[in-house]
Image 1 (spheres, rainbow over the protein chains, first blue to last red):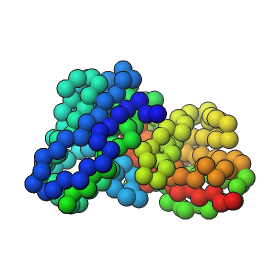
Image 2: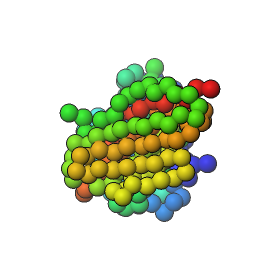
Image 3: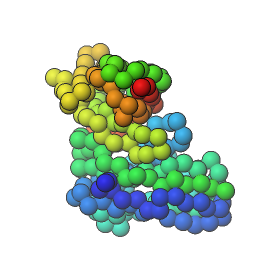
Image 4: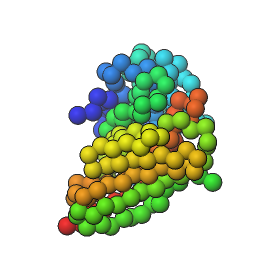
Length: 113
Length: 110
């Protein structure tokens, strides 16, 4: 079983809703990531947190708002999404350098209606 | 030019076959290399890291050629359970993020 836990596993939301995706890791990792994956495409980086500070934002629209309350938790707050934002949202964690690869959570499958 | 390029496949092979996947990367400063496996509607899982000296894990062998900026994965004695998408992944020096190739789909047939 994965050591990176994401909730919920599935989410359907309307374009006016506000929802949050949650990610928790107990691996002692100091870097955490949000990736977005569309069908038949590779994961695309959204955000990187290192030591609880945002270090990379890949020009993600402001309707996606990340938050890292502590070294084990990572949230992604969603507001006013569009249907094209429907995708698999993957959280991952790694050691500080990321040189040894990431561990991914099982993802949240988001549908925006 | 894509940062990490892979043949998308699909590769359809019979059980017991040997299959090889190739990958090229564009940034010569890339420092860490991986193969991930992703099953349909699941998360990517680390299959193996790739080292300059080449490395082997059971039926899987990975090779890295830094001069040619080329990475390979060889799977021997293919099993039905090897059917998945194989993602070539690169980490650049100083950037704390992985870049994924588009993946190569493998279908092992009985």
